[in-house]
Length: 409
Image 1 (cartoon, rainbow, N blue to C red):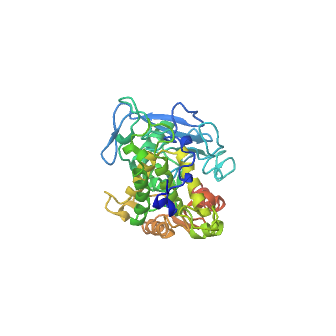
Image 2 (image 1 turned 90 degrees about the horizontal axis):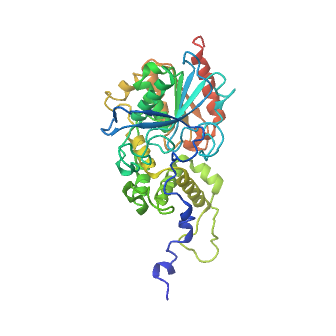
Image 3 (image 1 turned 90 degrees about the vertical axis):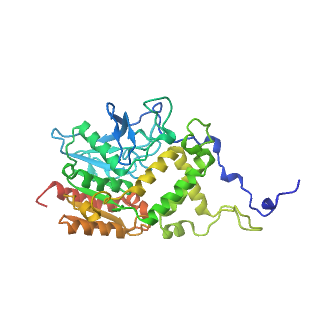
């Protein structure tokens, strides 16, 4: 049998496009049957519905969280750390059963570290709509058998923060000494300052924005389309499918797209250049890869093993919907609700949430009369620098928090 024209031209798909598909789970969401690791759980909205900003409702919500240190008798030493898109409550500590990755901000949290757990009680909660223990699309419904899947409603950053406020109530925390976070976590930080100004003592928003721009929406919406076009997505109801038949290809592609925005051109060029995986000696073929392509494939498959496609859709939509000024008379009016010292951190090479957005935020805060400080992380690593350049983050955050603790500073 002769080769088809596209095969003769080297255009046909090759085996590496479906690496180990049978070993990829339908969803990387944590399940109640999995080891809990260091997670703790709080239930809320058991007796009455939790009404979401966008009009949906949820009942019997679970929020997964972790804590480090000891809460003092007055509940006055608590710090909230808010995670980014594919993060979770495991901000510190080693990998282990039920928690396949080490803490994403481990360098900041612990005895003697910037968030010193000998003095502070540190809390991090998996966001509403997430997939690592908090109620999300992969969670079982309370009203009938099976997971939510496509029926899970749209949530916003404001909804996430409201669940965190109820967690604080349950833990006996009337006011956070500080709230910190980067990217989507920084959006939560800002909403804390606007929604609950009397319940925060200081804010540290990092690599984030007052409102998502058109380009940021374009980035995330492209990733969502990649998932929706995967036949394995099944319009969001894929949880009963066999391993290897879920939307892992779409989720991996969405991650590959976002990974490009997380790093800078300099980093990609310095690390990979034009190095190839398959040799270019001889005839050229369509699917010969450069090393940077294999790097992106690795990150795509890695996320498919630990995250849920529906949660990715939901949380990126929440990031696009982020707008401090919505329903509050505009951005300046919203920012004016913040009443506490704020340290804004940007990243010099960030192309996803460029530093001009954090500079703009700091200026708005200063115009409203606040103690607003801006510090820029000097790094070639792009948006991910707030996770990678921990020495610079600590150098900025530690003196700020020390000054906030001591009003004389």
